[in-house]
Image 1 (cartoon, rainbow, N blue to C red):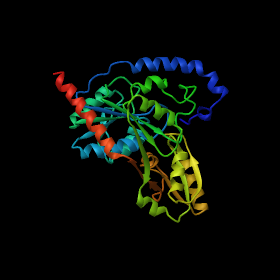
Image 2: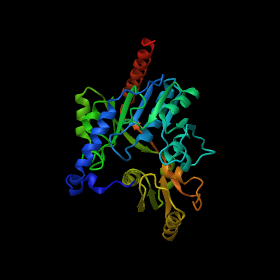
Image 3: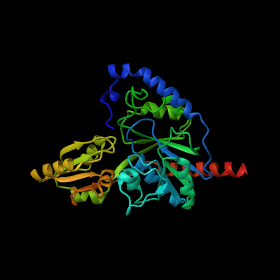
Image 4: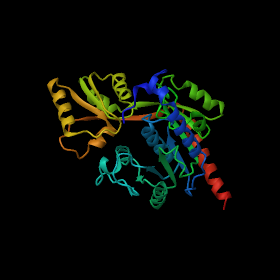
Length: 338
């Protein structure tokens, strides 16, 4: 899905016309948020966002995976496998599955952490526990009440914020902001922008932590591309953020080709990208998520460079305390309920 431009305009006739639908959708979504989910029996940490589209959830999940392992945990990621055909429950196998099977994000994450894909999240929980999970990292699902969350970390791109602040389809919000703020345990602001400062202030007013983080490019990827003009393409929630990251890393971006999030590239599109790059002697570069989606496809050259990034928190000690506290409380609650 390509986000409508009017979602990020302060005033728009289209947005105003869609407000009644947004109010109906928002009322239903707000009621769903109040439901009590099923206890998974082990801690569940949810990484979500308030709005439709990309914000940096996948890098956040991978950063939390590293931290949790340092704490002695065995995390398993639970995903619905958006864009994949398999209903699950199934553990992602990078040797056997493609993005068409399980979705691009699960396929990418499975390189670093076990990932269970399941449309029915309860079945996914059972599968994750059978793999020896001591906790579940839920990738998305903040607005879904099926599973009880022990903590919800919400990710926002600080440069984009929440657009016009209206509920889908009038804007990008998945539910009314007030209802979502009430169920947020921590906010993760990615980048140095100020578009989400009001949201950060609202979270702070609730005595919940606001964590700052930024995407750091992989040094090897930067070195591989340094001094080479590139044609950058991406089918993610915010392609422009990817292009900005390249430029900020000193990469010469000659041309860009943005596509919709989770875009499945056709052979004709890939052929056109290759031809454009060859004509101007440019190096093709894309995101790791896009390259995961291209694995196994016909007509994909072997010399496309994946530009890897990692999420680094400004205050990792605070994050560590936050996660440790939530895990302790989650296990204490379950022990007391016996």
